[in-house]
Length: 105
Length: 512
Image 1 (tube, helix red, strand yellow):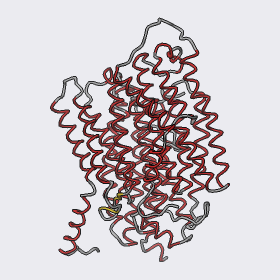
Image 2 (tube, rainbow over the protein chains, first blue to last red; image 1 turned 90 degrees about the horizontal axis):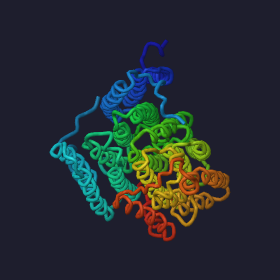
Image 3 (spheres, rainbow over the protein chains, first blue to last red; image 1 turned 90 degrees about the vertical axis):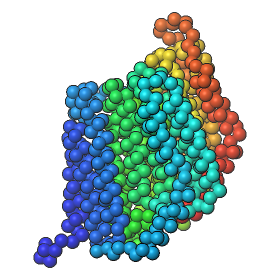
């Protein structure tokens, strides 16, 4: 019962592993570019949870600092990604990743 | 939870940052150049002239001076171990600034830009910002710094790839690059978080010490984390199985960007991989021994062999020259990995030397591809028929670059391959089979590289209008310079190999 009542490091790690799994699943199965990018955000946030949890239980501020930087980078990435996707939509009138296959041998 | 630092501590921190800034001048200078370019673009907007490109060239050349000044400085850590200045980092600073300059020159020669885009404003600023990112990648000594610099390079590379925004192929290439890049950097970040959890450190040197102290206790988690980190590095260097983006991106991107990515971005990935591997992973006394229970060498062997075989074999069927060179660059990532996994002083020297030779020959090959595309408007192998008669100089130059890419004497590529393979064999017979795979795949590569000169010189074009094709004088002379350098250093390679040997010293680790 002890394990269920107190929240420990393992709980955080499980959540982050699940998030990573969901993110990878979204990236691999979804065809809409926006949903793929959402999957990437899930992966980044899984890593963030890891950093914060380790920072809390190992001590040290590096993990917190790392997570802050990751949030900023994720925002920048979203800005660039959406610009590219909007451009794709203007040209092809669709954001389906699997339809974009004109570059092939 | 955390106590506020005292006044004296804050004073100490400020003093330390002030001391570090003196070792950070090239990066500050390049950042200023980046801002200057944006201002110059604003002022000169709408005018068709070379002001921007010339400013970029002169600015980048100016940074060489500051980098040269750093050669007399003592190697050491800056900014609380975030950043490192050593001979290894200096080598890559020169490398990236020079490749940025070549990218600018190659862009000036490419006529496709005039057709596709109205303004070149952001382009040169982005090239410079990518140089900054790569310079930081080569010096990064902390997981945070590695992540930040890598993302800076990736983001600018996405935008540069999609710079022809009305061009469907360029936009599609940008999307593919972005999706693969975002996923692999996300995985790498997850790997970093696991490493941080295991060691409680983000500095590479401290991580190395911590992993060595723990022994084999966490070998399974560590292996899992390294596979994820390898996904990020492998994506940057374009090695199998993280290569899926590279043929599409190389084909779709503007050709100068392709040349720039294939040389500089790959080299930055190798700089990072080498520093991470040598500094953060404890070394065994003999090859293949694993003090931390982490068999990184075997992973790199698999990557290297797969890249060499896959890149060289798939290139056999390519009909587009840019795509062919993309597969060849995958194969070259495999050869370079050979030098990384041996992990000695001589092997590091060989890897750096090979990067130098790859810089000259690959930029040269892409440059000729651009000059030919300027005349014919095509990169298809079939359209190269009979070009040898119309553009004899370009044909001769391309042949030299391709002979060098195969690794035949008397070119620079031959010396590069020779050094790599002898570094492998110097470790005894453990790596003999790797050297054999490398030599066999080089033989395969002879076929597809030589298809291009074959089409140019020995086959007649379908519609022969007999008109002479001439490129500009500056473009032709640059092509000749690159060709002569490839041949000259193939015969007199001592200065380059001495420079590579001098540069193989890395802070925080002693290579044998």
